[in-house]
Length: 118
Image 1 (spheres, helix red, strand yellow):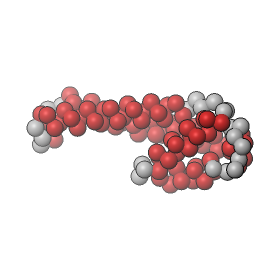
Image 2 (cartoon, one colour; image 1 turned 90 degrees about the vertical axis):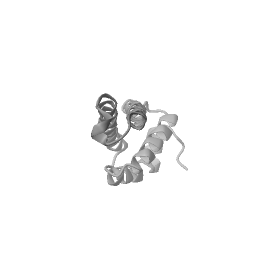
Image 3 (cartoon, one colour; image 1 turned 135 degrees about the horizontal axis):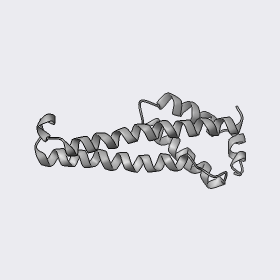
Image 4 (tube, one colour; image 1 turned 120 degrees about the vertical axis):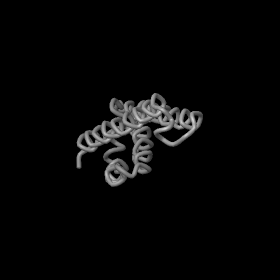
């Protein structure tokens, strides 16, 4: 597979991850805005849970949105690798992330980013 095709798959992967984490953030907002009785929780734990979901969703949304516009530089290859590793922990996309990781680590891909493949 050509480096351009691998990078286009990477961008698709980042878009999907952005959607996933956007939904996580929305769940956080719903938890924060809704009555805690729906979750059968007290108010304070519901606020903490909603805040965690919102913060986690926004943080990862920001990270994966950065991956959409990676420049063709050596450091960007490392950022992409980290983002792919983060996706391995996501059960929804683990197969896609593992396939992408296999392609991302090839010497042609590193060379495309201007790294010296080792």
